[in-house]
Length: 232
Image 1 (cartoon, rainbow, N blue to C red):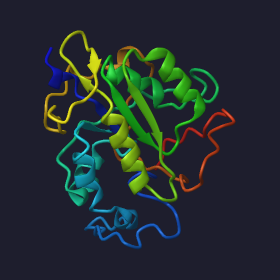
Image 2 (cartoon, one colour):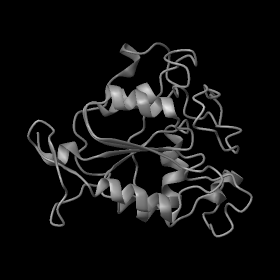
Image 3 (cartoon, rainbow, N blue to C red):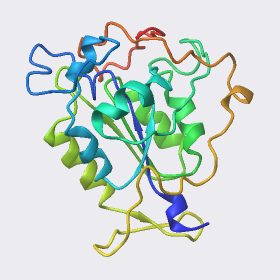
Image 4 (cartoon, one colour):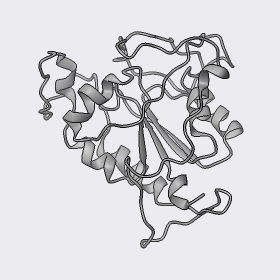
């Protein structure tokens, strides 16, 4: 397996990180709502797409927008079509208390590959679970849903990605050198994502569902279970 096949994945949520819910969100954003007239799309910042591509990792939609993200979000950010995580229909009670319903599917999708997960609902239990279950490097980066991705968030992502780079030998990792290459969303992705329907119960959520009520900031320290919403 080549080093490019072990390019870090970046699992990207939409509501909160890309579409912030704060009162000032969208003040400097100019992405048009488009013919569908979804006013939330106006909160997208077109500058975010190039900044995500510049991180040099494999971008993957990890949102309940599903394939709709490629139809309505990606063009407004200047992104190509990206792989989409399809979610098994799991119960909120599955797994330990406080574990987000996305965590186990994302681990299964990543396999042994290094990954970053950008979301506004990451909690302490998710970090503990990934640290115990994932064999490679990982970064769970929580974004303030009132602000969306900020300069500080991009700096934190770039700093983490700059500390290591894949090598072809057994998925080993070494410090990234300035001369080392990067991989983008159209580069090699490594093994195909797993069929989660064989390992987790239920059906795949339809892509047209919408998230709702993600405007509130969440207390990440108390370890309480999140509301598991299927709508957006």
